[in-house]
Image 1 (spheres, rainbow, N blue to C red):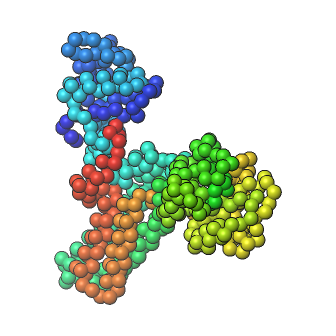
Image 2 (image 1 turned 135 degrees about the vertical axis):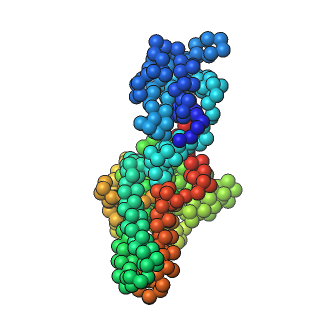
Length: 458
């Protein structure tokens, strides 16, 4: 447990019905009670109760705001310490006035993520669960939120902890062999190492199968919408966003710069980039937009190439089709509500039929088919069941890959007859790597780096 008491605003700043000032630490209740005017004395209030009253300035006795104060005594709180949450009226003035009084009473301003960090340090959650908290906050789709929620509940940790237990038992077996060589159990120990390592490796590999999908759900798919001017790129963005985010006119070249919008497509988060129409132009500003469009092509995880059903293929579109042949691209044939002049057979000769999606962005038709095409391309048709544990954190993915290498090295060494004390190094390394995921073996600098990404009130 820490010795000082911290406070921060736990809700987003701005207008709203309520705002919350969170206080955590050994003096959380005492310091809040010194500012709280009510029939209830917070010092004697029961845990997990909500108490009505006013926050007043102890210097002149003036009322600052009418509030509700929630008491949560440790260890039955988020941080496992005494926690007080002061619900004030929403808005910048009221919440800042209350926070200033709390800080003036001798409470320290919390650092980013310090409440969650205290929950980890106090043993209420492990590091994998703590990291999932920020994923919950940043979730851009319901599916991403569900993945983060499972991680916060300990889904990944429940896979890691048994693996570490198997390895520590194996390490104990190895220690016996090293300390008591007269028992001559080297052959049995080598067999046990090989079996345990291969089983553990298979489990880790199974977890990593979800890494690509998990990373997509966590970070979103960077999606560039490209095509010639007036093909309907901005109309497609508006249709996917279900609101008018981009200006749409019949004048070619309306979009001069990249317009970005985040959407959820069947539970898959997309970061849509509506780009300037790609064509040769003498307009200096439009030319810059075209260059940025080509830059977006290079960085995109997914490309939606929009073609106009009402026009024949242009040479620059044929160049794009050739250029994107080996890229993750879906051909969106727009304006299906108009007469068709596009050479569909030529396009079908270049791309699989399932990667060619006819739509009318203006009328909103074909969007469901586009959603399916994206899901097929990145998830093989559908996301896995709710029971699957997705590995989505880049740090976890890297540590799991390193764990596989250490387990492979240990198994190979055991089969090669290498001395048992040398094999022990790889086994211990695998155990430590898995420990870094849940926070059992992690340095202070890494903790600071992880929790610095959090907002102040979390």
